[in-house]
Length: 176
Ligand code: GDP
Image 1 (spheres, helix red, strand yellow):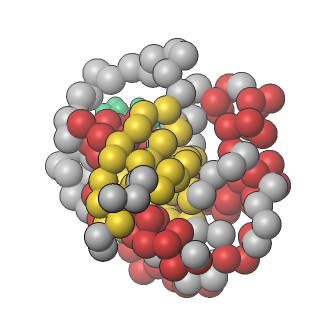
Image 2: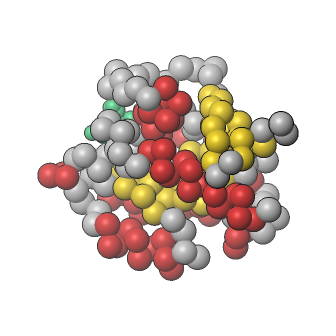
């Protein structure tokens, strides 16, 4: 059996949108509302199979990185895909998705920016009453940004989290 393909996955987005929670849900299938950022743990690994191919994902969280801007280059470099995350109850975090994408492309130094596998996540989809970004608006932005896949996720209720990560892997696989 061939070795699993290794992929570096980075989650980016404003602090508080749920990046750590999404990773915890995806890797351990848990949600811990009192999850705190563990300084020093920069990534988690997860093995999985998609369409008959085995992958080892190394998933990087920006935990606190919003505050440590000088770490951006090593953090982003060598990424195979990037999950741009906002929270549906936080319009500012949606506005900032474009900024995170631009910043990622600048620092990650990717070969083909137009075809880089981004996936956009509108997290906290369980907070329907507090929704401030509508799905159509987000979907339109993704379409206009080169047809990026868009998922509304809930790390809390385990909605679409696996699907979003799998979509990112499929985007990478489609490039090869
Ligand atoms: P990060 O700073 O982007 O890594 O965000 P965290 O994962 O630390 O989450 C920030 C806050 O949002 C925490 O209080 C989480 O419990 C909460 N949170 C994360 N994901 C969800 C979700 O899907 N739904 C709801 N309702 N809260 C969430």
